[in-house]
Length: 123
Length: 375
Image 1 (cartoon, rainbow over the protein chains, first blue to last red):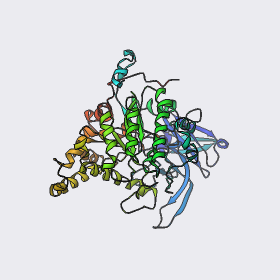
Image 2 (cartoon, rainbow over the protein chains, first blue to last red):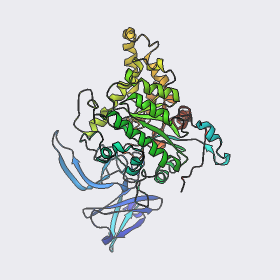
Image 3 (cartoon, rainbow over the protein chains, first blue to last red):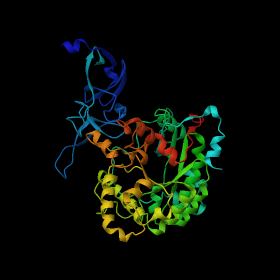
Image 4 (cartoon, rainbow over the protein chains, first blue to last red):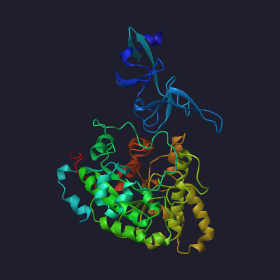
């Protein structure tokens, strides 16, 4: 892939250092990137909330009430939602999209890969 | 001694221009032991039980306080003057920060004596434990609206303190604030030159009426959206009751109620006044003129319409340039940073809102002392 070929690989952590539910913020060049082990899959997002530029990766990872009918509450996305520590905006770590306006508000996401026991983010 | 005299004695080399004033900072504390030190023994047992005005049971899943600003010692950024410096004043280059605390629920506590005692202890404790620790800090006295005569005394007691720049009351109140039982508070504020700040938060608790005109909503989202109803009621009441005819130098600051509701209220108010003027014959000019002369608003929580241009247009519909003052509301979940709140506005507007309006209103000196917190 052309795009992938031009990307730089940044070391995040050894696989055993990043168990499911954990995360790590790394410096990748001039960017801060948060890498999250979301139920066994590594997700990487830029540590900037599109709202007021807060360090979003310092927020809680949690589940949430997913869209439902009036009067009905459906808990879902357990361990897959990153909530910004400033204003509480929720982002789905699987695709970076916000829960409130997924079509227009999202985090910047990055690819990850695992090679020889090491987690990397591709920038 | 007036603030101007004291500050004039500060060493000239330690001064700099005030470029940013934060009008709403919610420090944690004072702690319980500092409160008890200033609270008469008669109230200790009650205070010890946490006797406040109760909790409505609303839930904010974000948490009311920001979780990311914790210092190396594990303490929250709002828990000490050093924490405030590290997490707010230094990074956002805030030259003057007004501590607004506070104990807003004391305006709807059933016992006016207890409410007054708590406010007094709180004010004394903040002035003793927080204000001396960082030269950038100023203080808005916390006051209760339960017994206006007691409150007027409390205002006068501290008004000469050089770091006291305002008195702040909860907008949660037993009645519309223009009514005559509250006049001693307005009188004391005008006499001492301290603006009266109003701040939401205790709406619906204690002996407050329901937080909306239609009773209690179901959840925090509704409560938080609706509580500007108390601001609207107080604005209309203060104007209609002729408070500003009685106290022409009085200024009222609406803190943390946002801005966007004001313009349609003024239009509606003016239209009604033209027909119903004879019921308030002392009101010799349009309500909107009185509002723009006597009220100021803090920017937070700044409205965020999809099209930012709409907000800028709104600011052209009233004297926003002279009526708005920046506030962060640190460390709360709906706070703003100076750059975010003021983005997209012309430089002159920004300068007034970020600093000059507050400098004028709170009589801050155009130079401020050293930046650093005392170690």
